[in-house]
Image 1 (cartoon, rainbow, N blue to C red):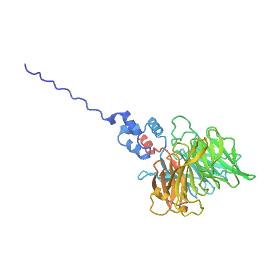
Image 2: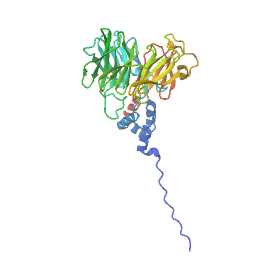
Image 3: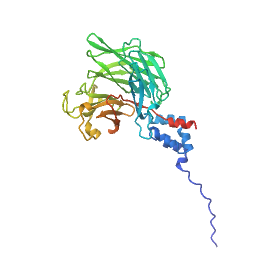
Image 4: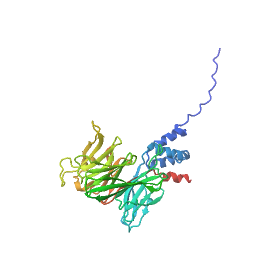
Amino acid sequence: MGRRRRQPSSPSPAAEHPLEDDDLLREILLRLPPQPPYLLRASLVAKRWRHIAIDPKFLHRFRTDHGKPPLLGDFSLQINGKLSFRSTLDLPYRIPPDHFSLQVNGREPWRLVDCRHGRVLLINSEMRQVIVWDPLTGDRSLLSAPPAFDDMHTAAVLCAAGEQGHAHGACHSSPFKVVVVDSCEHGDETVVFVSVYSSETGVWSDLLSTPLASMGIAVGNRSTLVGNTFHWLLLMSNNILEFDLDRQTLAVINRPPGVRSDDSAWIIQADDGGVGFSALSCAHCQYVYCYHQPCFQMWDRKANYYGVAVWVLRKSIGLQKLLGLGFKIERNWSHIVRYAEHVHALFLWVHSSLFIVQLESMQPKELFKSDPMYTYYPFTSFYDEGISGLKQK
């Protein structure tokens, strides 16, 4: 009996490439870094990729999943009243300097005092006015100072959106708040006042006040938002001003022990989400005219065994070792110039160079040469102009 001839089987369909699955491709694109070039370059691969990248629902999830927007650059206010932008992105993706620009009356004493959640804040104490500007949309709000304020020492801006999953850095249509700080001499002490403006109500809140230890103390223009609490360094003092937006309380706490009032310092966020502190100090002495090389130190504020909040030194490292420089760093030629909350990084000016140090990895990067009088206000935002341009094609 002969063997039965086997019928030829029909060819199996070619296995679908994983990237042909829109759901899988979407999950891959969501994992791209938030810096502007990555999503734009991916959108140019094919029409199907572009269709996903420009989808508003995808962009919303992209921002929500990342949570924290990338650093795009920094702002400074020139003498002529022009607010200038300098991109810190790598070439060839740097944003042109004139892409974000705002001109205010150069004959009036405007001051750039804050930059947060995609908005820039300027104040004019003489004209008693405040400008809130969104560089990405160009929207500009001009506010009058609180009626009871004689002056405005400094101010801060923040997004007021509170919905679940909101990503700060895409707040262009969200309401905002402005916190203005003033102080006055009363008897033998200084009294600090705070008032909050809400864009939703269009009015300023009632004043909150707290006394300081003595006269001559001023509020420094160095605000840090940790959780929903603002912190300012107090000048000519070893104290910190705290304003809790949720509880509407104003309080004064001490700096870490051993930090001098003339040390270059900044309030930061600790790794556990609490309040932290950074300073360029001397680990060897407490002399005002110190010739040792500066030491970079970080503290966390934690509750001790008795439930009392105390400062705990977390890190201490020589600034020369941290930056990997081959020359002696002079104390007067090094200082902390700004803290970028969303990227958890410090800007350090050292001998005519601006460095950025990521505090999680402690990795430094030299950005550019700069004048020590230059003011650095880091600007973080989700920037998808290239993606938006594709929508029109």
